[in-house]
Image (cartoon, rainbow, N blue to C red):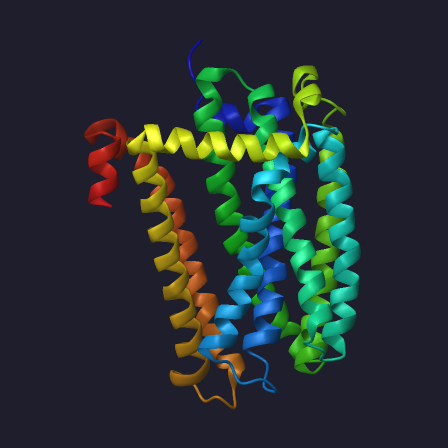
Length: 315
């Protein structure tokens, strides 16, 4: 069977439903993250530093590192459709609490704790949707569908961030900075509710798990799978090098983003007018969205013509 093209994948009746739920959720992630960045790093009442920026990124990335190996054990026990539905609803509820904390200008451990839970649920949702892809399309189209899901999600994440920065300017006309950030969080909560409703267009067990996966699921199984993963990497150096290269690339990109945030916040503009720095970051994120889109369009042709390894080295 021939692999489906871009348009065919978008028109796929079952796959398009998964894309809609995933992409709206990730666009809302961008809106949510822009509100947090605005509150923590671009509020007039707070002086952004390298430490505060690094801590903010740590809060965002920590759930992915801690719960990643064990997400599969949850998703192999319950309906993935239901997991996505209730996780999005819980995220919407948690955002109501975050909005209250932001409106009060509170940046203590309670805010960090709720934000960590929210990002941890995001890891669960994305893993569930990725795990369900093989059950919606044939093997020949799976790689293309996965690439489209990830790339589209990245683009929508940037777009959501841009929308968030735009909303911040609108809300700033009527409220102080903290109240504006809280209102952005409330808009994000609505986005998560809609994303939870969109996943209901898929049937309860349409994205798994399969019967044999349910019998294998356990906490110890999560540890054993993680161990098997390290063994596999030790035996296949090509895969290990790819993961290391990806880690270095993402670490470098995150470092550059932190530098860009601090330059826009404290150097390129007056520290007394952080909203000017916020506009600069919005422009930078918009350009990165353009870059992601161009990369997604060009990469398949580059890999086909020059090969995967030569293309990666060239990039």
